[in-house]
Length: 353
Image (cartoon, rainbow, N blue to C red; front, side, top):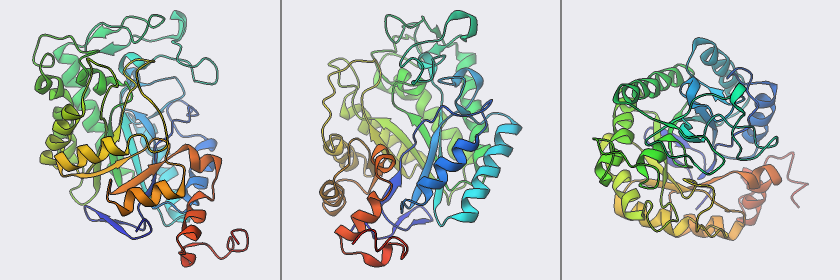
């Protein structure tokens, strides 16, 4: 049942509903702002078992925008630690963070100013990728990463993971999807290298697994460690579910606890067809092949969908995002729908009659 407890590694979640990372583009010089306190406190009151902080840059070039959360210096660490301390003091919820590098998808406007548009040259920064291939016609040509830059990138993820542990987070998720840098190395659409990091699928996985290995070394064994992965590019020459299953198998062998299956994003327009729970079959396929705890997100909005996914063990837990912003009582309404009245705060029971 969806309201049963779930053990991932040595961490026990009070149910099988996790709030997915949602970029807020509201940081101040990489640090959380007042908005983050309000936003994350609201999510913490939703009834979810764990709240994941948004995609957080591991170095300056890895930002999507100038308003991204970051975790690569002492000030970032201190301010994030203050935030997590505040949240943990007020809530019985687990917290995680998603570490990322935007690659060629970086140096862009925040979406409510100009969606999917890169910054003008005066205020932009140089972006990097697996190969010098722009994301789209209107995007600048990224610089192909040298091996030295790749080694420095691996160190950046490792250092940020160490900082994340000192912040007292319960879960760490490495972002390998959504068209960001690690996805750019994984996908044959964006990776045309002819060295150890390009060509066949094993080479294209090398950077992802090198980072995973180094992060595993510094992240505590009892805490949750996962990755957001791409199940398919939704393109004929892109990543297939078999490639994603291979990545998941390797991550499990390294010591990762779960994968969160996403899809699409390597270029702005793909053949992705979105509908209620549209990634569930894909996630289940990868779960069966890799034999690793698995979650997915993507238009899980109906109570019947959420219940069915968990009851039929399609995935081990669900991650929801936009629905909880649209309807903050969604989880408590789901509890009522499942006759789990003791889960609903007494202050809300009259509202949910």
